[in-house]
Every structure is written in C-alpha cells, then in structure tokens.
Image: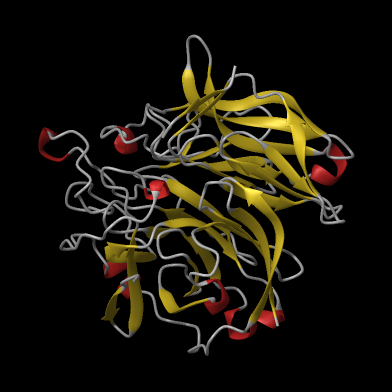
Length: 412
C-alpha cells in the first residue's frame, strides 16, 4: 500500500592560466534543498582547482542566449520530477507522490494507471527519474527510479515498465536494480541515463548518512552502471562484480551525455556550498566525505576534498561559497541556440532559473555562462530540463501545492 510521509545567486569565479573555472553549491543543511529556499553560508574553499586550470578554453566568447518562447504544456501538477517525450509526441511526467501524467498531442493531460502498491514517498524521495529505453519505439520499455516499501524493506530502486500503446497504463516488468539506501527520504537522487551500449547510468543520493559516499558496499552517493535488462554490472565496470561506476557523491540529481563525444556529466547538489557539475571518469572518486572528526553527518565539509580523499577529482563547475540548488542537466542542440548550441542547460531550484554553461572540449572547464532570462524567477523553482531533438527544451517546475507546470522552451 502506498505510504506518503508528511514532510541572489552568487557565483565564485577563479581565473587561472587563462581558463575560467567555476565552482557551485546547493544547500540542504538541516533541511533539504527540495524543501524550499535556504540561506547561503560562506565558507573557505578547500577543493582543488588545478585540474580545471590545466584545460585551455577552446570556445570563443559568447553573446547572450537567444530569446525564447515559453509555452505551458501542463499545469496543476505537484512536484513533477522528470519528463520525457515519446516518439509519438506524447509527453510523460511523474509527480513525486507517485502519479504518472501523460500529455497527448492534443494537449490533454491525464493520469496513467500504474501499480504503485509498494511505493514509498517521503521528503525528497518518491517517483523521481523517468527514462525511455533506447529501443522504446519497438519495445515501449521505460524506466523509473522510485521509493519502495514493504513489510521488511524500504529502499530506492529502478523499475522497468511497458507503456500501453494509448498511454492509458504502465505495466511493471521487473526491478532492474534495488538497494539504494533511504532513511527519512533526504538525498534520494535519482536520475537515469540509458546508453546505446545497453547499460543504464544511475545517479544516487547518500541518504544523508556520513559513511555512504565512500562506502563501496553501499549504492548510495554513487553513479551506478548496470545492464539495462538484467541489472547486473557489465564486465568492463571498474570492478566487474560491482555496479559502482563512480563514488564520492552527495546527491546526484542530473546525468547528461554530451552529443558528439563519449563524455557524461553529473549534476550534483551540495550542502551550504559547492553545487557541482562533474565529468564522470570510470572508477573516479569525487571527494565527498562528510564524516569529519567523528561528528556524524558534517555538511560543512567541502564537496570535493582532496586532502581527506586523496586523488579526488575536481569539479568542472562549482558554485563555490554559495548555493543555487542544481537539479538536472541536459545539452542544448540546434542552430537556433546560436553560440549556445551545445551548452549544458542546468535546472536550478533555489535561484529559480535555467543556467547555461559552455564547457571546454576536454570537459574540465567552464568557459562561458549565462541564464535564460525568460525563465528567471517567472515560473518558480526549476527541477528538470530535457533537451529535445527539435532544439526545444522541456522543463518541469518544483514549487509544490499543485502549482507546478511542464513547459516547452523554444529558441526564437
């Protein structure tokens, strides 16, 4: 049975060796970044920026992003976490409380029936990531990341479904992978990125438990890589017996594959500082270790701490001493975006905007940044941004109280 539990951006710029390295943070502190705006707390940075400084800026300076048209596709929603568009044009989103909603080509929105008998929602956890299988057109398979609870287990897991041809229902197929930790529901993650090699990348949260990000026996605070059908780790994983692809994360909210390359980036929420965009490297550790001095879950530590985590990789971008609450990422496509074609669009909750980051060819440095003015504070908190093949951007808001929307943003 479903159980629902009650519950002036500042950027830090560092110019080194002619390259611009940015550092970002997203705040939860004692309450989650998902729970509402949180005050920023300045703290000295202990993360290394040397890796970013070694990368030359290869892109020319950009002018402002183009003007856009913003159209409301659906309204009256409550925390619609993710959004996908199927080949037939149907748009599917899901409210964090566990309801699937389809928006047809005629603009009508309707509830999609799905068996959520053992569903768990609490705090930031519930129905989260949604992704279409790479072969959706022939199999109608999709994946969700969601909370689960029965008489003996509470966890977060990835579930596969088959969508009815008319989108009236979703039929559960199998649990692909389970066992992601969850306590009160804080820091649940959880984004899914299907890959052409038949695997899924899955970003998870650390469940606000101090030992989890560095614990190789836990699936929390990680990016996982599993076979999309069996859920088993592929033979070419860093450890072929483990689904762990990268570790040392706090709360991975976004995964984005860069077109025309093999680069994948994670978008991660920080504490009272250091939201991050990270270039994922197989087996890498991204340096979050909040168990300092045996004081439990110490969220004052830097997100990337090479002194306490030797070999930790520096972020491509970080918000530095203030937080913005980064919640998703997707690469813009299409000539209509002008010089911002190929930039990473990042959904921002606290600062209520879509942030655009131009990233150097090697993926290690941000060379330009801007925001989409038409979305700055006009629709509230932005959860998911999802770039579409036609050049548009699907966007979900994250305000709650049935005041959320699905938007389509089209460059003029």
